[in-house]
Image (cartoon, helix red, strand yellow):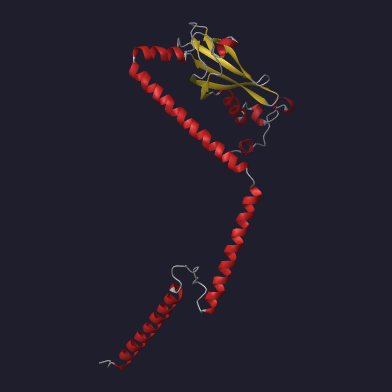
Length: 262
């Protein structure tokens, strides 16, 4: 490699027609694209497929059919400018009725959605579901009851059982509310008094156990009225078993010591 080629490879060679104000850098002179700028442009042009839910009732401009609120689509999500620091997003999708393209854009200024193309937002009454597409549950039940009496009877039984469950739950919540609203000071006072009495009994039993020579891990239980001497009898039996065990161990030790090793 010649010295001029080496200088050009290291980025120190500037051609005679290089203009710093025009080209800014050798990359600009050689028309090398900026990787960061390309990445930003690709990100702006790229679309993300998301799950979009229709925010209100719309009417398709292609066939005139109604697309109800809550219908979900696989929509292409793209950014379309910004409102101050809030991004504005557009969602493009195909209608399920005639497969025409529909586009909806967010409106951060009014906290709403705008139908850009492919559909038309329905009136407020239709948007609330007061149009002809709303199913009257009462008339539906009447039709079912007239056509199938057994199914109507099952529905009535289910309604009664649901009402009974709701009533029992309401009664339980009312009892709980009444219990929480009563005098908490008296309940707390009685509980603290009971805890003081319990601690005094435990302290007395611990002192009695220490007087009897019991270890710290052994706790005496409160005496029972039907067994006045049960505690003393159990303690005496425990001591006898301990003495017998010690004697038996001593006899075994003596027997082993007196045995011959041959």
